[in-house]
Image (cartoon, rainbow, N blue to C red; front, side):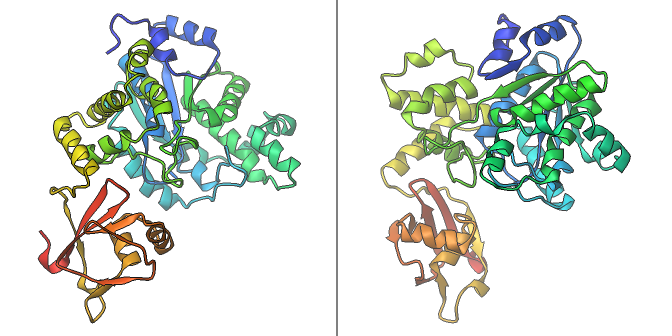
Length: 402
C-alpha cells in the first residue's frame, strides 16, 4: 500500500500533534514491530467516519508491519471521561460496555486487519479491575494535582464554579496505566485526548518504561459544517451504513470541508484534490467513490450513484428492504401514531425526537410531507417513511412481510 513512499510521510499525514518526532524516528530505526495503542471507551454502539480517521492511521501502522492493540475501555467507561465536555460523561455498567464493544469490533474490522501478527484486542478490565487500593494510591502518587488541573476542561469548570470529582481526576491515570500494561510504543487519539495521552508518557516514565510517542488526529467536522462529527448532533456518517446511504451522505459534505475529508479519509495528495476545487460536484462524486469503495470494497458504485441521482430527482428507491410492524402497534381502527411510525422505522431514537422532526417538516410518508406531531394515519399494507432527502424505510405489516 505504501511501497515507494517515505514511511514518515505516510505516518505523519494528517497528524496534528507528534510528540516527539525524534522518539518516533528512533523507535522506527530499531527495526522491530512497534506496539501501537488506541483506547476506545465503548459508550455508544456505532462508529462513524470521525472514528475512521484514527482507525485509518492504525491501519497504516499495520501495513508497515507494526502491531496494533485496540483497547476497549470496558473498565474506564464505567468511570466516565469528561474530555472535551463541561460536564462528566455518565458512567456505564460493565454489561453495557461489553454489548457496545461487540459492535465496535465488527465495525473496526472494516478498516483494521485482524491478522494476529499485527492486531490484538484487549479489554482494560484485564489489568484495572484487579488493582488493589494500595496500588491505586501508589499510581496516584506518580502525578500531582496541580499538573492534573492544567487540563483545559478541568480548569474551565473550576473557573466557572462547577465541581470536578475525584473519579474524573483518576480517569487520565487509569487510561495511562493501559499504556504501562501493554508497554505501548505509540498511542493514537483525537486532539481532544492530547492531555490524557501525555499523561501516559509521564506514567510510563515513572514505571521505568520508554515513554510512548503521542500522535493526535483531527476531529472530523460533521455534515453541519461546524461541529465535530457526532451521533448526538445527527451530523454523522455511520461506518456501518449501507453503500448507497454512505454515498448519498458524502455527497452532502460542505464544499469547504472537501479538502479535509480527502486528506483524512483517502490517499489522494493535496495537489490532486486542489485541482478539483473548481468543480465541487466532481469532487463530491470522487470523494464518495473513494470512501465507499474503501469501506465497502464489494459495493456497486455505479448503482449507488444511480440511486443518489434518482433520489435527487425526488424518486423513491425501489430496492428498499422491508421492516415489519406488528399488528399490535395499530389501534382497533388500524391507525398508527406518526411519531411511533418514525421510531419504528429507526429514523428517530425517541418519540420526542420524532415529533420534532415531524414539526420541522422533515418526515414524508409515501412521498408526502407530514407535519402534525400528534397525528395518526391508517396503516396500509406497505408504506415508505422518509427522513430528509435520502433516508427511506419500507414498513409493512408483519403478516405481509416480504
